[in-house]
Image 1 (cartoon, helix red, strand yellow):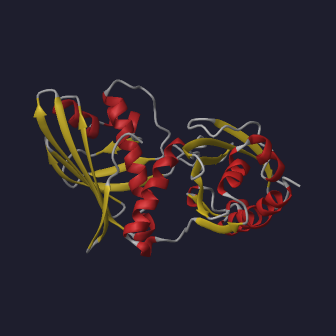
Image 2 (cartoon, rainbow, N blue to C red):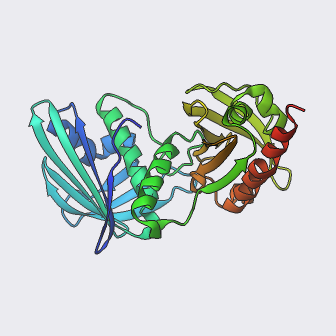
Image 3 (cartoon, helix red, strand yellow):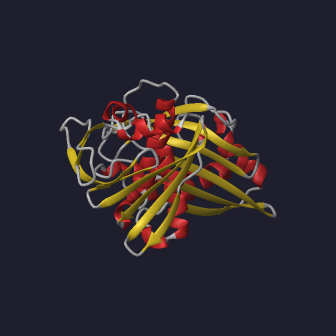
Amino acid sequence: MKAPLGKLAKEKDGYQVVFERVFNHPIEKVWNAITNPEELKFWFTDIKLDFRPGGAITFQFRDEEKTASYGEIVVIEPPNRFAWTWEGELAVWELAARDEHTTRLVFTYSKLTADYAVNAPAGFHDLLDLLAERLDGSEKMYPFGVADTAGEHNKAQVHYADAAYAAYPELLKHQPVVVEKVLDKPVEQVWRAIADKAQLKQWYFDLDDFKPEVGFHFTFPGQGHKGAQYIHRCTVTEVVPQKKLQYSWQYEGHPGYSLVTFELAEMGNKTKLKLTHHGLETFPQDNADFAWKSFTGGWNEIIGKMLPDFLNNVNR
């Protein structure tokens, strides 16, 4: 993500997130983009506005059910301030011209319950990215309310979840899976086991290919508890030789984006390995194969048994 994260805070009436963006466009153009339904339909969704303080707003989702939700306009102060409610939450858009070609936006979304304090900020982060693209001339229509099976819009959710859980532990409902294991092998040998394709295929999954290089894409098949077949799609995101290996973890045809991190620490002739899997809450929660319990069991088997067994036999 190129844009900075919004800042989450806990207030008396709930949680709020504040975003700041700067657009290389005049303030009148930005105002039009956030108030005109003919512009909103590109980067947000289909919205009906009774454009007056107290006027009704209808947000039309683009899912198969054509779900609708409702709000009310609170403030209209062209071209500087626009505020509306949405199902009890409050959105405030504040614009300031830095010069005739540049506009600063401060967007505050507040009155969030704990259940929405993690997911809503990530969603608005993505919408602001789409607003920037629209201002630059994009004519793509965002499928608001439709699951993003490519997972691009779920990346922000992982980052927001980590930041929110660190600041407000009471929000932590979907803990990352963490498995730690002390292995009776030196760190160089453990690194080869997790970073060398030939060795990975012997104890891990049947990877189509693998290189410990940032940006490298790889896939592998997997099976669920009741025989469902899945294709895992991964991209290497961080490599620190003999210390850290991280890659994204997604499922073809299913929404969700998560991160798997292997961290190695040298302990003389032994190695402490820490496996962390973040972002499980982005996967469909009505599928038992994507449940926290399923991942916990799987990673404990992989790190606690399969990897040690391989290391104990690899050089015999």
